[in-house]
Length: 300
Image (cartoon, rainbow, N blue to C red; front, side, top):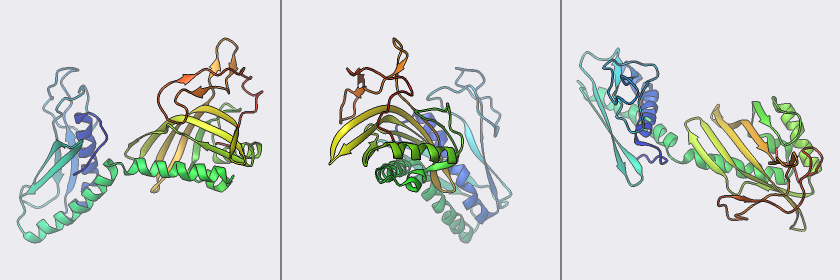
């Protein structure tokens, strides 16, 4: 059984099939054939009817929960016809995928293809289960720990070479990893000896090689384990799996601005406190100008 996150049936099936066909060459090489995913566009938006013509480019005009005609077109293989049937069944909050291939002439050929497909299924399961979510959470935990140690190399470990970051402070954007390292070092130098940062309400969505995260950054300085200053800001981050490793390619962090004063607010705290829920409350302290205050920092 392959479990997936709660997305629409149509999107779920397309994701599974696309991933399946993308992995198909591993099995196909054993039989000497190629596999191509083909589908039909709808005749018009809202028609719910396919054109009857199979194409390999983007499919158009379909709507949520439409049944999309698609096929796996296999060429260059044995002279006998190969039929592959893939069906999906909603089961226990996930998706059961049934896979059936027929048309083999020899048992050796059948067994070779079966071995290839088993490897494909293992990789497919790893892609569509919650493994990516767990990997991203582990990445953040390591990032939090490195920041607490003020370990600059450790804090920079998840940052991609081509990072584009919108930081709390000037300049307007940071576009290279060395500038990002310098920004991070300034934060560590400014922070106290017991600095900590985390994201109590961290949200993660993983789709293939892309992960999107968001939540409220909590940045705090401690003295003998007691919080002396605490600042909250907003953060959205995008990660890409590059060379088998998750790396952050974009970050956007910001403090809210009070439109009545034109000043950034460093004193706002979430209504949910330490138990993430929804909403924020307005603090009672006065805000500071964007670059005039010295909030707890050190997060990059």
